[in-house]
Length: 368
Image (cartoon, rainbow, N blue to C red):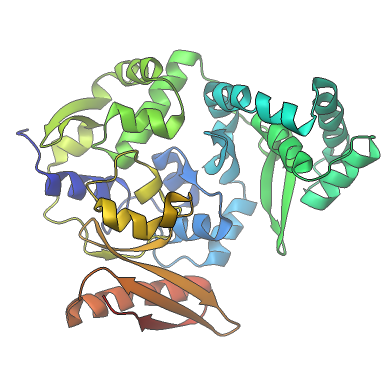
């Protein structure tokens, strides 16, 4: 394959991200396994990240799949919540949790959390959740408090994070509006076991097939692993991954995708949530938007990503929603003056979002 232009990279990425139309993955389990892991710090964003890749499914359908344990939420990498295939949670935690845990040592000291505190909290959680129970965050913290562990301020959150980070618990689906936790070994008992080299190869393959072409540096940022480990993972994946030259230098992509060729387009119009792998899957996002546009997507670089209007693989605006009992109001802020065709296409994409939520949609267009 000759050197890829930036437009080719965008087209290949959108297909890899399952945002360019039809693809063969028809279940939550299949989509999350293809992607490896999907950002889900914000639950509503995580549900729409699945919904946008599974046309015709509703929010209720996605929630039901999570109740069937096709995927679960935990903190597998970078200390942030992701959706992962339920059976893969433990090896992913084993592979990528060392750095977040080491980095949190200083925070534990600031909060006055000792090793004894952690052990007592974990024992309390294990006892309270044993037997297939699901408890809300408040109920988990009450169990910890009953064991004599005080949880003021951020202490409680840190203890719950730590319990999931070490693989004791995981985040189960909400009950009503309440986040719940369960024991990982009970919620998803049939865990896959992978050795270190196989784990690196697996996460490398899933990252690049679901986002490539991308750089090894992008992969390192996504996993939180060092460059040495990331290069080892690419090498261990063998011929399933291939280096390709692009206008911006060498990148890596799935060999099957490269053999299939560059799609004729980057997939038209899409409205992914802010916390989607479309944005969060890369360290370098210049293929999708300019530095000035990035400031509009992440104002003040505060880590809060706004939902985006995407046309042919590029960000052309942002949007936000207000969910009401019968309607969802979508307010857009385009970066440029869209033609009538663009508006119609985005409104069709928002109509699918409304169907996902089970509500009518009212789209309010801001000025460029």
